[in-house]
Length: 129
Image 1 (cartoon, one colour):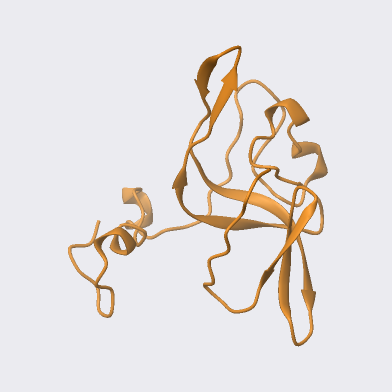
Image 2 (cartoon, rainbow, N blue to C red):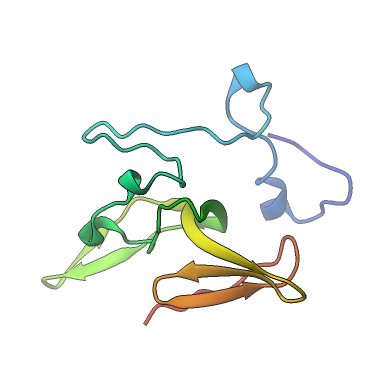
């Protein structure tokens, strides 16, 4: 959307600024999603939005203790099923439980693990076993 921004020199980072919706003046914003085949939507605080385990590829957790976290970049998963690769929809953000701990930071709960985020904008690496 932008050709350049002050203090942003990486073109890949530049692509993360702005939105794609003309009505929002191309400003980024959170938009609730509604799923066609169920009563789910994208609000993280609603436990009834929790996907079934068989479809929860990003290990999301929908609860009153959850917030939406940016995945940092678009990523895709491939699942090896019966020796065939099955492509899963791209993920750009997900709902995860978190806890704030004084003098430490925010712990983001992903699956059975906790990952410490010590400062705003920090990228954390998630390793799936």
